[in-house]
Amino acid sequence: MYAIVDIETTGGNAQYGCITEIAIILHDGKNIEGKYSTLVNPQQPIPRYIQAITGISNEMVAGAPTFSKVAEKVFNLLDKRIFVAHNVNFDYSFIHHQLQQHGYFWQAKKVCSVRYARKIFKGLSSYSLGNLCRDLSIPISNRHRALGDAEATSILFDKLLANDNELKVLNEFTKGRNAHSYLPMNVPVEQLENLPYCPGVYNFHNEKGQIIYIGKAVNLKFRIRSHFSNNSSNQRKQDFIREIFSISYTTCISEMHSIVLEALEIKKHWPKYNTSHKKFEREYGLYCITNRNGLMRFVIETKRKHLPAVTTFYVLQDGHDFIARTLKEFDIDYALAMNTATDTLSSEMIELHNTKMQSVIDSLSNKASKFYITENGANEMGDDRTLAYFFENNRFYGLGFIDAAEPIDPDTPIPELALYNDNSFVRHLLLDFASTQPQNIITINA
Image (tube, rainbow, N blue to C red; front, side, top):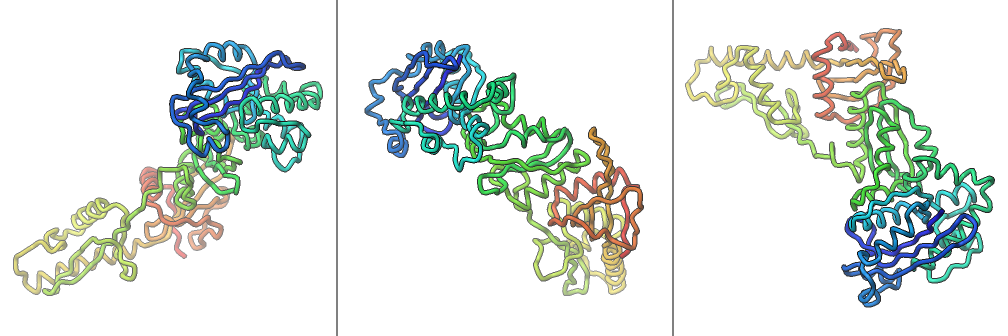
């Protein structure tokens, strides 16, 4: 009925590491039915630090069978039994990967003795196997060897069954596909069960509470569950899963809201496991200078800290496109404005050109207004709040919720805004949205 398992390996992930020792104890729920253990030749060197922990050396496994020689035996012992282990997903991922590599299709229901112990013996300071054995007076020999740890886990399993009233917790763990079987061992299952079915942004935290990953979701429960429900043997994925200790989230009124908030929060917290939105954004400034002939011209350069720019850009091509569009709008000669003209100009022509150039600068100054882009919620959870994204001088500054029943007073900015640094991705996303929804733009006079 149960197979209580422990393995030793060459590394921390199933894709690149291999099993060096395996122990399987067959248990019918009351008594031990049989035991099997063997060293396994991993056909790769065992790192020195692992040799120091387990005591298993390269010489010890040199004459041991490879996994291909024991795969059939392992499969037959595990087949049709519930898989029990301390930190079950680690052992399961290795054995599943190794069996699959040798042509055996095997899947099993899983019980993690760490999670089981947390439910039955609440309030202990630690649920590592060594500390549980100490606190529950479980004898353990050959620590960090497969059979020694499996035998200790078997005694722990007996104690868990004995203290599980009518086996309610065990039945909860083994009923269908449940979060206990695939969640990281340190994440409380209640955090997954309490997730809403709505758009949002979620954070994964490590043991110290630091945010190590930020993601967005159209459906928070489905998306977060998908992180854990596939048992990938990829090293980065396994390292990532082991570091997660808790989940937090913020609900959003729409998918766009979640996209915006994810990008802003990644820039704010710079999480370890995020790759998108972490690129450094170079800022460019549009400057107006006067050459030695008295002719005003534009130039785009990397933004200077103490020199005010006419306007700024995060993408160089955006700056060049803006200049071409603006010069055409104000009927300004491109060659003159960019100082590529070689003809000698009269004072009248210079004065006319400079007047037009000043008109561009004045126009941009007049457009340097404060405004909101609003978005009305309409997700499946009935979240009908209205969100306001705040801009000043065409730069994004923050966002906050407003009362849709009370129109925004153009003379009074919203006081409670979550402030963020300007972000070119967010700015372009929201301004593109506003270009198709001009009625959602509210100018602030104050």
